[in-house]
Structures are given as C-alpha cells and as structure tokens.
Image (cartoon, rainbow, N blue to C red; front, side):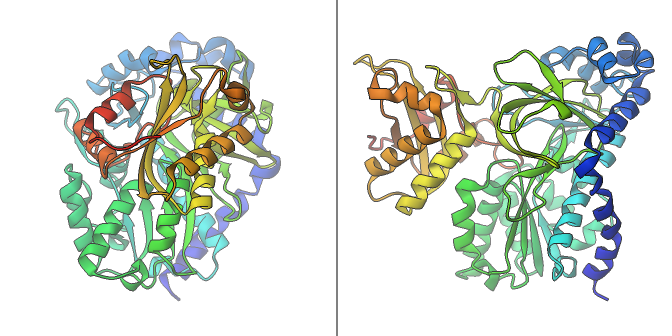
Length: 502
C-alpha cells in the first residue's frame, strides 16, 4: 500500500466526525465554550471575570467584554516576559507576530500548547483529510510538500520562547516525521531574508518529487517563478510531474488564479483555500466546486459575530446569510471575545459556510459607498476576464477632493499582463462595482457624489519594494487592499516612478 493509502485510512474517521457540523453546530460550539471557560477559570483573567460562575452563553456575554488588541496588549506583554496564568493557564512560550495591514504597530498573538494542537495543527490535519476525501486518486504523500514559512527570533531572550511569523512557529514545533515529506529543509524555511530564502527554496525543491504546495499565493508565485528561471522549463509540471494541489490562504486567490493556471497547465491540478490566521484556524474549502469555506466548529475557538453598522453581537446560531459580519473569537490561546478584524459573509447555515469579505478596517466608505474587499476582488476578476489582463497586486483609496473639487477612488495596480485599453478596463471595473454594491452605485449616480475611478498602473515590484522597506517582505505579510485613508497609497505613489494614469 502507498503512503497516501495508509494516510487515507488514518484520516477516514475524521470524515464521519465532520458530519456533526450539519445538525449539531450549536451543541458543538456550546461544548467548546464550556471547555474554554472551565480551563481558564483559575487564570487572572478568568478570576476577574468570574469564569467559574458561568453556566451559559448569556453568562459569558454578561461577564466578559468584547476586546481589541489594544485592550489586552498589557496582559500579553506580561506573558511575553514570562508571567504565568494571565490569559491562559501556565506559561505561553510562543507569539505570532501579526501581519495585520491596518496598522504599522506589531501585534503579538499568544500561541499556547493547546492552541498549537487544537487550533493550528488540527486545521492543517483537516485540510488533508478533506482533500483526500474529495480526491480518492490522490498520491500526495508519495512525494514531498513544498511549505513556505516565515522566520522567528527569541522573545525577550527568554529560554525556549519565540516570536515571529505563525508559519515559522508551526515549522519549529512540527512533528519530526513531517520533515521527511516536506521541503525545504528547516534551516532554509526559517531564513529571515526572503530574497535569499526564495532562491534557496527553489534550488532545494526543484530536484524533489513535489506533489503539493502550501503557502500564501503571492509569495508562492514568487518562489515558483524562480523555479522556472532555474529550470528553464515552460510549465511547472515539467519540473514536478506529480504536482496535484496547492493549499493556499492569507490573501484572496482570485487575482492570482489565472497566473497559476498558465504556470500549471496539468488538468489534475487542484486548489484548496484555507482560512488560517495568527489568531487561529477557522475555515476550509471542503467542496472544490464552492468557493466558500466550512467554518470549523469543534476546534478550540468559540465564534461570535457583529453585523457591520449594528451594535448587537450574536453567537453562530444567530447569524443570517448574506450579511457582512465582523468576527469575534474566544480561543485556547487566551483571546477572549477578541475582535479579530476580519469580516465574513455566510453563504449557508447548514452547514455553516462563509466567504471572507474583507477587514473591519480594510474598506472604503469615504462617501457612504461601503466598498469592501470582496467587491474589489470580484470587480477586478470581471475586468480581467473581459480584457485578458492579469493583476498581480493592487491597493485603492479615496481622493477626497482634487483641484477641481472632484472626489473619486484611486487604484494603484501592478499588472502581470496589462490591458490593451486601460480606459476600457477601468470602465468595466467601475460598472461591475456598481452591479455588486448598491451603495457604490448610488454614490456614482451621474457623477454627483463620486466620480469615475482612477487607475494608476505602477512599476514592476513596487508593492514588494514597499513591503521590503517596512521589513515585511515574505512570510504572511500582505498588501493592504482598501483603505479609508491615504497613508499607504501616498507612500506607494512616492516610491513609484512616473507612469500614465487615466
């Protein structure tokens, strides 16, 4: 029997467990909340908020406030200095440095032993389980997995304590057996200089039998392009004939899909989205025909949701399809009713499936248009489909008023393949955004409030150079897609060489 056949037998029982998601979602989440509260009742946070007296979800809501990073960073810093039993029992040794794009300030998210096992590794295991269920002919374990990671460094010089990219923490603590079926070697995977690491990863991996890829689409594409440069091949399957799947997350895949499909032309290639953040592992694309993801209900994370623009916070069983919700989580890493900053829309409530619609601070609502990242991704995908263009990176922000008292959205786009007619591309994007978003459409009516959007094509590698200037090149770092202010876009424009706009 092949290694993949053996693995399939190992993962098969989980397929039955996941059937509980269809009918027992509220019960599963109730079990999670009870487990978390009971585990943390003797911590400093648990004693102060009287976790020991909590019996119901309503008790939890009354006793525990909604928090942001700013409100718990003091406790987290004490934990980083070695104090025990603060937000979670015992001493937490690992901290994921957040790649959040809404602030230049670093966030250090605790990663406890329980969180590592019951949030992050459990998510990775379920990704494989669901992939094998959907692909009976898979041979992924008969080759190597190319897994991209970031880097870490000592945390306040405390013995055994690390701070860095979540991916680096996962690699550092991974079961040694997994290292036998992955590339690159650990020392390469944890290098901090992405440009050096990119070359070394490509050189180490190109001679191996790589069957699967895992990582952020933008950074993985950079590595794969280096593989192509070194190999001199035309398509990636000429280098890795048994490549069959890319497990991706971190940023939306839509802007990159066409480039991957041109690079990998094999009909057996699969793509599977995951929602794994520094704060936890939340969702997996369980159906390859459905772009939405299954919300993982029996991990160490209890979910709550707040509809944007509303005060009411509801548990999972109170959500409705199609509404835009900010996600609030409580986890075994010591985050309690923590506003993660991501927004989601549910596409199904039996089972609970969703799409990531954006960030609570990554949107444009300068004129009441309420443009979210999901609108932008769909609009760009449509314009690219109609024109044959390919978008590599982009960001957008408002122009509040120019010399002619005109207000508009300004888009900086790095094209992998530019459109022949940039004005036509812009018209298609603008029209599609109006179809997708009634608020945007209303503000665009007769150009009264909001004029036609402006596109500025930028030079090659501008966004990478900008990330590099901030020490955020590689790993899980992302380009901010939409912003209500001009901080990011003005910095990028200052770094861009002159180019025509419309």
